[in-house]
Image (cartoon, rainbow, N blue to C red; front, side, top):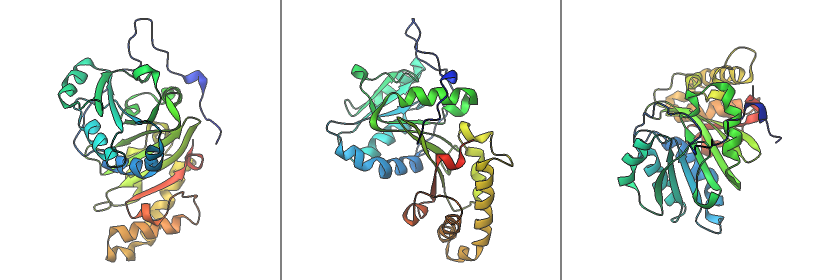
Length: 277
C-alpha cells in the first residue's frame, strides 16, 4: 500500500535543547485496560517476534501516570518470546521516576522521551504501541506523528495506535508498518454492547471527526449496525454468536481481513484503505 503520509504535517524534530518531542497529556490509566489490543498484537506480531535474530524491542509510548500498561505488555509478550525487551517511554520526568521501581532490566525499562522514541544506540523497535496518546492532539498532527514513529520501526515492525475507554471494553486502533497505515481494528467486550456503532466514540484521532454521512467509516458503522440488528436471533446463543453472524454478513460488502477465529474474540479488522478519510 502506498504511504498516505503528508510531510507538511510532520512534527518538528527534537530541538537543540534535547527536549522530547510532544506534549504532556492527561496520563490516566487503569490495569488491564489494553488487554484487547495486547491480545491482538501477540497474535499478529507473534511470528515476527519469534523469528527475530536478537531480543526484539517493544515500546509502550506514553504509558501514563502509572506504569501498569507497560508492565502488562511485558508479561503478555514474554508469553510469546521470553527475551522480548519492553521500554516504557514517557515525556513527563515524574512519571518515569514513579515507574522505575517496577523496572526489570533488561526485560522492562523506563525512560524519558516522546515521539522521537529514544532507544539505546538508535536501535529500531519491533513494536511501538501508542494507546490513548494522539486522541489528545489535533488531527492535523496525526500524519506527521505516524511518519515519525514509523521511521523508528524495524523493517518488519509494527506501530499500533488507537483509543479505548477507561476500562478497556471498547477499543479501535490503526496498525501501521514502515510504509504507513495498514489496517483498522474494532474490538469490544460483547456483553453489554448495544450496537457496533457504540465503538464510534473510541475511533482514533485520524477517523473520529470523519464519522459523518458520506464518509467511509460512517458507512461501515451503519452497515455493521444493520448486520447486528439482522443477527438478533443469534443473540439467543450469546452475544459472541451474534457478533460472528453480523461479521459474516458484513464480509459480503466490506473487505474484512480477519476471519471467524478473531471475530469470536470480539474483533473485526479492515484494510485502512477501506476506511481512510
